[in-house]
Image 1 (cartoon, rainbow, N blue to C red):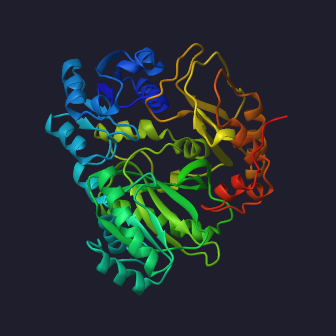
Image 2 (image 1 turned 30 degrees about the vertical axis):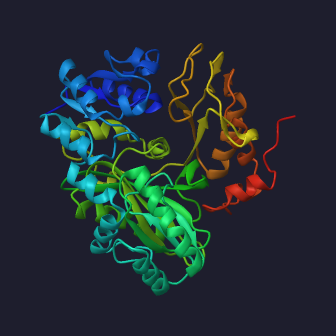
Image 3 (image 1 turned 90 degrees about the vertical axis):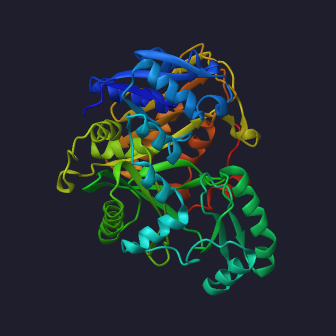
Length: 455
């Protein structure tokens, strides 16, 4: 059944992105919003808008009853969760399905299975996907954690089984640190996810973070190649690329094929991302998790493949089979995305909500700015600081970095402090240009004073 009216259960730039994809397919849209988001761009773009609660996310964007009532009141027949908020919440997916509506994404059972890192690891192993050496399952007490750590060897990562966003993670270099940090990680995981389960993983020294975009219809699956996501601050991605630099053709093929094998093994439906750690020293890669939603960084894949991933999600959710065979998907050139946040990078990335007094967006072939801004818009202080994503596409990686530097020089968000200075400094970094970066590179680079106020 093709979708007729889509409720967008999110906000910000991803809500705008979903509305535009829906409109391209002739689907009517309903935008939910909190009291703080009445003037949001997505509200203006949607065919209908409905307030679902006060500013606090717990009473609006995270309220399953409020969103379900909005869907019922507006006659929506489908719900797109975007990313964040309820996008990977199996209870939400189940509530949508139980109401007889279409959830744009995998079913609740798949979200539940792949959202638990231990269950996902078991599924990956069963599909023949390499995993980081670690505990065979959850470690329910500190004695079991110690046994697992001694088996794989220190240093180890203590990770929340239901984790995400870098929460519930600690590195233990020896037994004493493990004994001290495991209870901390358990308490943080319980507070963040309502689940204090942990597991133990071997630390890969200075790894890169590479992920593969997949599309599935529940029976078949394809990949849309890989992305490089190694530039991270506090385990949050800052700068993303498609594809990953310096991979051999054989490694790229193996990596992407393994992601498809996992997607097929779990009967995946929709757009998803399989994430890996890559060891530059050995050339080995290891599965770490699967994100059962659209990713923030999906535009770089769209730029190099020409595939509208959000539109594909909507078509699959509406009952259509995959519209692409693997041999129809090819990569052209290189793309880079940077996240423009309302934060002051010169003051420890302090949040900086405020009024946007002017907006100048770079124009030209191979330049895209996904955002939810307009002049005079008041940035609310209640949500994630992401304002937009600047994406460029060029024939080579070097040309893409040059184009990004040029685009950043003309992007203007008046009245706000943003992370634009960070990205301009990164674009000039010899290490980044040479591909000599990894997941632990950025924070020491910042601490060494490489980011300074513009002259």
